[in-house]
Amino acid sequence: MKISKRMVAALAVAAIGGPVAVTLAQADDPPPVAPPTSTTPVAATTDQKEAFAVLAASPTPADEENDRITRLADEAQRGLDAAGARVVGSTDAGPIWLVPANGALCLALEDTGDDSVGTACEPSEAVIARGITVGDGSDVYGLVPDGVSTVEVTDAGNGTTTVALDPGSSVYTLGDGHVTVALDGPDGPASFDVDGGG
Amino acid sequence: MGVPVSTSRTPRTGVRRVMMVCAVIAVALLSAVATALAGSDHWFSGTLVQGYGYASTEAHSINYIEATGNHNGFCVAKDTGLAGYDSASRTTAGARSCSSSGGFAARSENGACCYHGWVDNGTSNDIVFDTSTHYSY
Image (cartoon, rainbow over all chains, first blue to last red; front, side):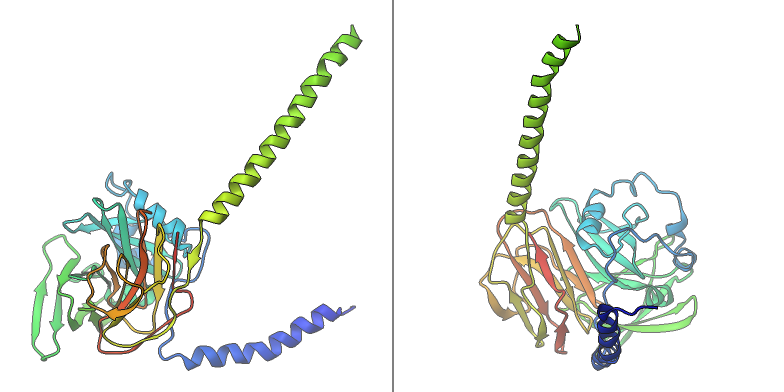
């Protein structure tokens, strides 16, 4: 087999660059986490559908009003699946969406009056284990996995409040402060840091 | 009969060629204009210390904003204020989108003119932002 100079150069770069890339990635503590780039939508996985059955359901008329989610997906290029996005609640400004993405799930707040939508995305495994939150600068909206009916919110002063979700709802609302949210998730107890930036 | 038909086709072919050339030129011009108007600004990366935000130098008709950070609690928005650093609690022109429990936040905006990109860190930790942080216009 004839090995070209280009191939030799590529192998040399891979041999030298590979360990460097790993070292750099390990230097970040913790590394930035964003859904990997994807030019095509990435549909919800089986695990995601098991944790959030709404993702396996047929779209409702509200789900089909997804123009702004489609625009967000087109601009983000991170595999957000507008057709697979589902409305899971609402704010005064518009619907709250759960959006599958590339290796991730996103929670999005649509503002119908402003013709805008904002989102936060997290790795799929984390969202399946304990849900996801997104803030709008004033409030933080959280979505819990199916089967979770309450969350425990511990503030900086160590005061704990139990927040009961409304029947049939998987969405809870917090202020913009720094708290720890604990819940009994599908994989067992889970807790995580929530900071609305306020 | 064959000659008149051939004669009549010659001008049509010529017209088609001219139209095709015009179409190609039009597409090229439109593409050039679109390229000139559209763009992205990676206005911030690196460490943003606690309590501060940063607005882009340039202002544009923003369509999209995104930021990736190594700690939760940061927000992105569009802003009409002065460029550069300011308090994280500054009132922004548009709604914020905050990565309250993760490391990625994004907004699709309405494209109205003209706004700065804004990212803020209202937490009690310094946050390091990835170079992918940008807005598009």
